[in-house]
Image 1 (spheres, rainbow, N blue to C red):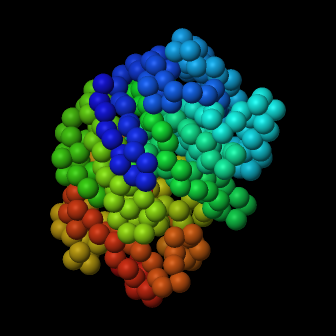
Image 2 (tube, helix red, strand yellow; image 1 turned 60 degrees about the vertical axis):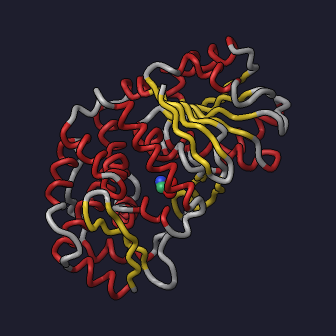
Length: 348
Ligand code: GLY
């Protein structure tokens, strides 16, 4: 089993291996020694893995209940949060108890936010079951729900006590969903690791998935250690996301998936950066890897509309835009641009 430690405001381990789901209870009991668990999951993931996790907790002597909500982004809201709080209150969950988030990004973010606020904050464990949540969202303590005004607008930083990545759970993802998560994996290679980028480009991804996930969480963990609250280096993780968020808004969060939008964002900005002499010979290599992973490179949405939507992004500051540019594969920097400079950048 691979182990990566994140030394953020609290330290925790990320455990990665094939088939470790059935050991979840034992692995958790080494870190959390008292209290009962609430497993929070969605109806899709529950069908595949809910009972296995409940059994492993019970086998390890951990008392546990399970709360299941409908899968999909529409569940990532205050009404699901309230259901979790009420369920915990009615069933006598106290500050010494903990939540186990079993699923993808929606489950992790929502259950994580419930853990960060129930009784002013209780422990939680992440068991991510998608490429996106294993490589990215389960690490770093970002928890949030959506409101009508935008995605992830209400949340807290609350680090998990443990992250358990069983890469076998990725076998039940549809090929489209697997591809979608690969956008964040490619992003990590682009911003921080030429070695990861080369592995992704030259090797069979599924055969090397444990190594790939280990490299991803190591990159993500280091960025979080250096800048947990996203004041500087963590902004690098937004590579491709400025345009992606605008694209997702343009399509009203339907049709175009997050990973596809990030892929288009990364490719577009890298081609523009190359045209402006900010990097050389990397846009085609990025495109080849995106295509290998089944991700798109372009989209039909008009750039002027995307520009307007970018300015409404929650990450757009009064002082301008923080745009992430890769100067080479594995090397990235945040460029501060005024809105006028950003408009010029997009036009080119
Ligand atoms: N997914 C970006 C971050 O955690 O900062």
